[in-house]
Image (cartoon, rainbow, N blue to C red; front, side):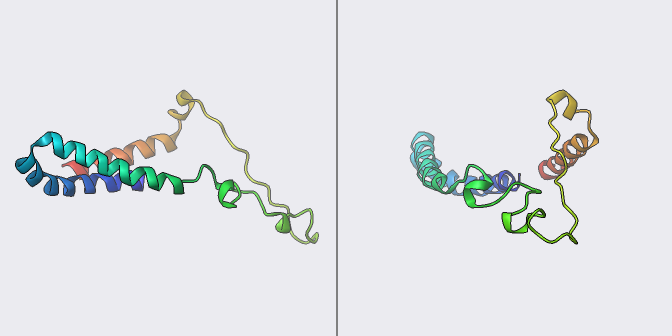
Amino acid sequence: MSIVSVGNGLGGSMALLIAPLVITFGWRPVVFAAGGMIIGIICPLSIFMRDNPESMGLLPDGELPQAENPAHSSDHHRERRPPPELDYTAREAMTTPTYWLIVLSVGLRNTVHRA
């Protein structure tokens, strides 16, 4: 969400840079140039995107590396088990307080940001 939020500020600053170009060259060449620049920047950056944490050598939350696995360590350590993963349907998720807190906080942030 933070990356998406940065887009709001960058979009506003880009308008200041693009407006004189639109006045000078017209909107069509400027739109094509801006689109070409975006594609030229985003496509190469997509090479560095990772599909999942495991592709970077990380483990999912709650899993222990083999060296720290409680079965291989001494008995004085308590076994840590990850909490069970909950899978919600969209209808079930909308009944949770967490969902409504997120909706409320994003809505209030957008209200303040846009006002």
